[in-house]
Amino acid sequence: QVQLVESGGGSVQAGGSLRLSCATSGYTFTTTWMGWFRQGPGKEREGVAVIDPRGTTWYAESVEGRFTISQDSGVNTLYLQMNSLKPEDTAMYYCAADIPHRTGRRAVRIGTFSFNYNYWGQGTQVTVSS
Image 1 (spheres, rainbow, N blue to C red):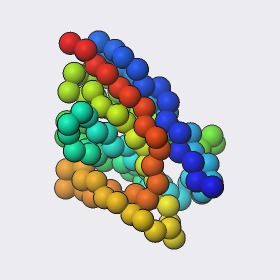
Image 2: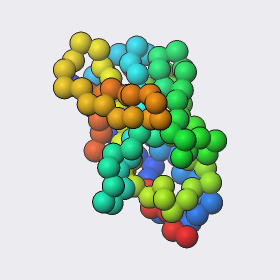
Image 3: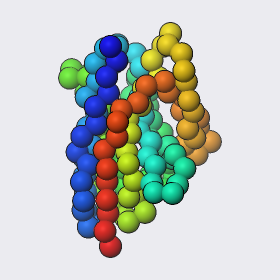
Image 4: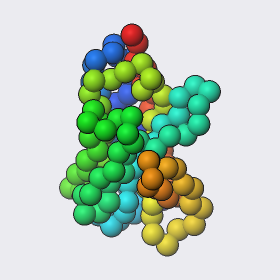
């Protein structure tokens, strides 16, 4: 059974930092594209960052230079280090996986890049106050 469980969200002041984690199980982590997307109140889903199995990364322009996506295959966990947080980063953050040979893909754009995924977690709330 595929599981993605996010943690690490919270409330911070502008300029602060948070580190999100996504613990995964039920599939082969090392061969799977992974990513983060977010959805703020009244806003559409927005791609944030993606990492491929080789470690190549893509970022939304709005977070480039502030956020870092990484993964630890030893513990099957995806991370999102968020620095210099802004009020406009307030959103529910979801981790997502594109698991091969499974159906039900959705897509979210990150700049000109389209990240297709078919599993995602329940989300973790990030609130940034000014």
